[in-house]
Structures are given as C-alpha cells and as structure tokens.
Length: 213
Image (cartoon, rainbow, N blue to C red; front, side, top):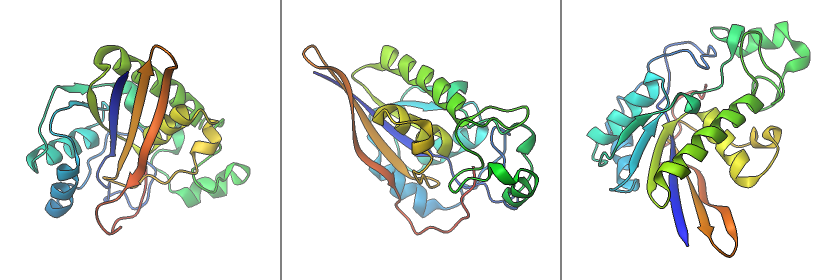
C-alpha cells in the first residue's frame, strides 16, 4: 500500500483591500503574526515536498512558515493551484456584485459553481485544473508527503475531488487563512486509489481577520 500525504495550507490574510474580491490578482498578504506561523510550522511534517501556486501571497506564506521552523524540501510552483479567476469581479466588493447580479448571489461564495464571471472562470473550472495539479503530484511524488500552500478555492476544489462530490457541494466548506487541511491518497493493488481525509480547516489561532479570497 502506498500513501501520499497532502497538507493543504491556505495563504495568510490579505488585509489591505477593504473587502474587495481579489481572486487571481497577485496581491500581498500579512505574515506579521509570528506566533501564528510558529504554531502552524510546528504542526507540519519535517520532511516534505513544498508546493505553492504562482501567486506571491502563497510564496510569502510558505517563506514565513519556513522561517518559523518548518523544514523546506523542494519548493515548486504550479499555476494550476492558483485561486479562481474572478475576471471583471476582481477589485469589486461582494455587495457590489450582489447589486449588479442579484440572481447570482450565493450563500458561501460569490456565485454558484457553474457560473463564470465575465472574463474569468467558474469554480467548476477551478476544480478541473486542480485535478490536473493533483494528478501531476501523484505521478511525481507518489508515496511522499506534500505541503501545498494555496488558496481557499483551491482547497475546496481538492475536497470536491477527494470526496467525489459536485463542485457546488464543496463550496460549503469553510477554509480559513493559515488553516491546515490534510488528505491522504491511498493506493494498493487490491482496491486501487482512494482518498482519506483526517481533518479539514484546522485553525491554530483565534479568528482575527476578515475572510476573503
């Protein structure tokens, strides 16, 4: 039996955009909470392959975790792990989107999973490219431990794939900044591949920042 461990970490908070949707915009995050990063670093495995998306807020978060004591393995970047592209909605607030697209409003996300913003992509599109990234990880690092520092949408997409649920259902997962979600891909000759999820959204500090994506 071969077990590949995935530790998904959402990037640190983006606090300077006043609640605007940033999606795939390349914005900075706040890594100033040293106690938080020490606590999270202590929970991560010492030997691992490190991955981030192509967006610098994930690089900044990974660098802060490494500086806080996490041991760096290979550091790889994969743009298929980027956040959902929100197209023309990026730079607008949730309230502005609600006013302009009244029928699109969603309880947990900006829009239903099948809806693509103008010039952007749907959450279902994000699930499909996250699948590509996971397939590559399993091909290149099967049997290893992977720490993937990514985004709330990307982690929800990974949960959709692991649980084999519709993308719309995965939008109900809460994924907070600098939380850890652990998934294990188990592969054996008798049963084939399957996913096990030890925990989702493990938060190691009080919630103190507004959650955006």
